[in-house]
Image (cartoon, rainbow, N blue to C red):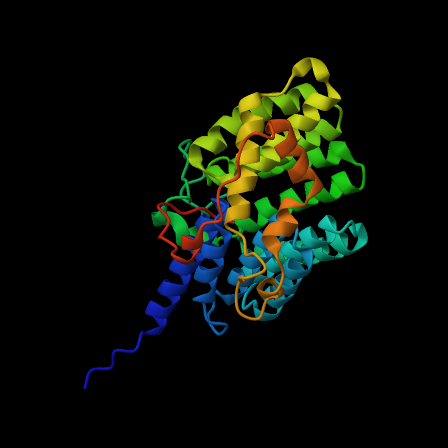
Length: 336
């Protein structure tokens, strides 16, 4: 009788596919669907650590920091190699920054630095051989399906994400110039590898420039960035870019703020709310999200309320979509 059980290779392929779908869905603001994809990844799978890191990123994006930290800690426990461990420690550092704990964030980033040092010793410098020929002027975009395994298994992702978080830590420590420097490093590392990483790096740069007193530069980046992110449908980036643009406009009133960008940002927050668990639904098995109304908490956030108020109170929020239980497969793939 033929053995129809999946092989190790097939299991790994299924886990990778579930993870990349979850990342794409999260980037598009469809968090419930994303978490259902992540539930498909067994704790014993090599992708389990990355799955928990992705959960951590998603929860952090919506301000559920306790849940984010729980998943990032689990990601550290499950990490089977330096690449997974690096992602997990970056997540914990980002959690600490979100909570204002600069010292803890610095400690976690030291662990990331140790990981990167080991990768350097192995010859994984992150500039060549990571995603096609680095000497080629053309972008080798790992947002495409063909290069997805490289996206997960190569160290450039960790270096980019570490630069983002280091920039954010510098902002927390009131060192705006250092924040700008690290944001530019992230841009250089991602420029020929991933559209989404490049755009996220530009958003980090805009925030850093704003903190350094260069509101006009920040506003110009946001105006251009907002158009591209909206065109690509990356909801999780639209609303932060809109908030940075609003802050730049407040710092330099003569600049003005794009009404379209503010409206797009407010729309993004409403779409996200429609795809978050309410008190009657859950995120995934065992999570506090099962008894926590994440949708209500999201809508009550001060920054979200501010963005919606600026966009005009007459705009209706999307209805809560009962078909969020039916998660169609995403059309593309985005890295986290």
